[in-house]
Length: 317
Image (cartoon, rainbow, N blue to C red; front, side, top):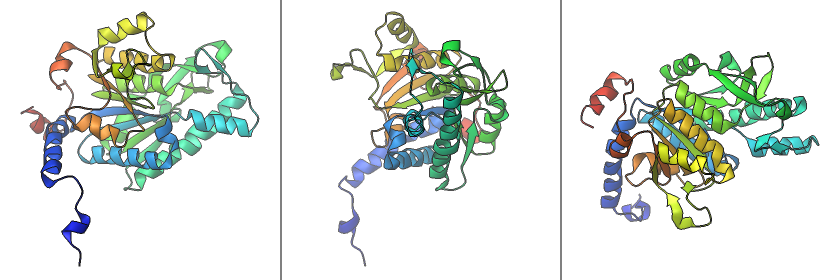
């Protein structure tokens, strides 16, 4: 025999019901829509955080969202390079990738990191498919800069392949190793890849999980966290050099995606427990939202192909 007093949470039943009810319009709005999630940082390295984030993505899939996960794996790559006594070098924020480094990048991203993420999702059922960017030309690239070696500039995305996986109710988990126009492989910045993939699959949102709470006007002033800003304001901050160096690739990818038709971009802290759910399913959210248009400030609607069921839900939004 068990008693209710032994299992009841500290939150009151009324508070729990209110929280669930608050999520309803956001669930309705996400149903049938594609959301690209760039996954990285400490949330990827910590096994418990990784399991929680993957569980949250499964929940979002169950309520009708169509997730695409795009990941890098910088810390794992650095550890592998150190193991083989291969120097770690960066130029202008990009990893210098010679042939030996490229081989390690492939082994780590496609072999270890991707398989770990797919396994974490598939612990809940056969829901995820691991995808190397070189599979079926998912990501095709050319050389970015000869001084960077095998670092690629994306030339095209095979959106049809990713959409076919989503249409079959799978969650694509994409490792950012590209097929080269020259027949080799290229290392792709995962932030850049997420923006291009979001644009190619006509995503409703692209979300960047990072190790900070969002975009700060002044990173040293934690009260300057920006909750909402427009695409034009984002471009102005980039042009004025007002953005911390580590945030530049994310914001540039946000701009690329929004200019291509993605409705909103989000930057959130992946180390905050259940930050994805809090950002997507609550009124307040927990990170920074960049809006593509003034309309996006005012309402969360978007001309996006929906399933018949999702379309009926959207009629009253």
